[in-house]
Image (cartoon, rainbow, N blue to C red; front, side):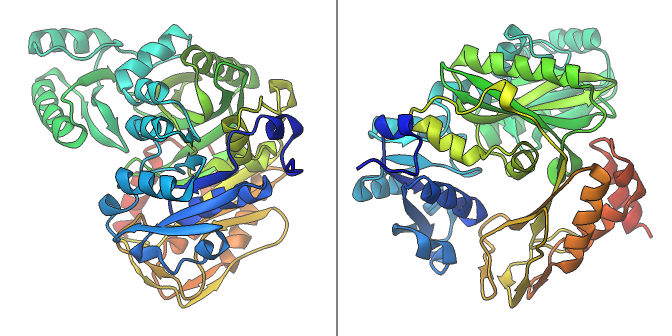
Length: 464
């Protein structure tokens, strides 16, 4: 019997009817909800630390895959594949983090006969290697940060020559890096050799390859993202801009969309180039192109080949359910939307709520004793926690995402201030006080702050 929840074309060529969600927390719940709306059965895997999580109760099947340590559970590929085979799961959704950008996992899932809900392994490998990714972007006409699309040679004389041609300051990066690791800023030639040696050693230890590359270091850029949605060799669209410049140690704290002050024609040109790049590499599913934006110019830095933490910002402004679209693409359905269908309206802001000290940022695991979530028009909370939930020390400290949407940015700020005033989480320390301060900051209200602003703001706050 055809499932009425699925579009007809998808139901007729349906490749699977169950999805194993290889993740935990709020993203596991987010994917579970989208699956249920499409009539897909959900199989949740969990560690011993997560055995009492409420979202497990809503799953069709829940199976423990190991102890609390991520390496023995959520990063344990043999355990996940065994759970997939035991339950007969037809597909695997990796969420974000953990195994979501590991090409070998995508390949292993598909070789085991299931569908990986995300890009194919070759696309993940291409975009996961910063040098190969830059080369692919340059071929597609995506604007990139000045610097060669090749690895740094071992000869320091050649490295010095390349840096001089780019012009100081430069940044030395690990080709396999990410998350703010494996990079050094070099302001003058005399510091270049030490930076290369230290970064090469760090790259070998952290990423398994000593390969480095070098680019111009932009001193006051914003961090702007372009969301894409593609159907393999078929159609593709870009779905608006996000500004993620409010960062601490390269980790995003507040995200918003659209990115203000960027001419629509410039955004459209770059967005279309991103879609073309995806077509050239046969990209499938959702992904995010990350750029530095300075003096009216975009500069590609990397692509995240997965769903982003901040995807709700784009969903709120565009009306596109990105997780639903991920699932439909994986089912073999052509895109339901064309570029002309996408009209982003209003403004959205997301605050990442972490269980951490708001002043020294030390994670604060423990028992949530009371929880009151905000509501009202234009307010969304993505969270898996409830009163009585124990925040584990084994995982990321993110416990909720508070998202608002309003007709204008000014109204969105007011709405977020109101929502932050309503939310109460007791039993563990959270960064809610930090968010309340940021939303009151005049420079944030004005908009357009660069990626260094929050670090300077935090330093000034701590010196008071």
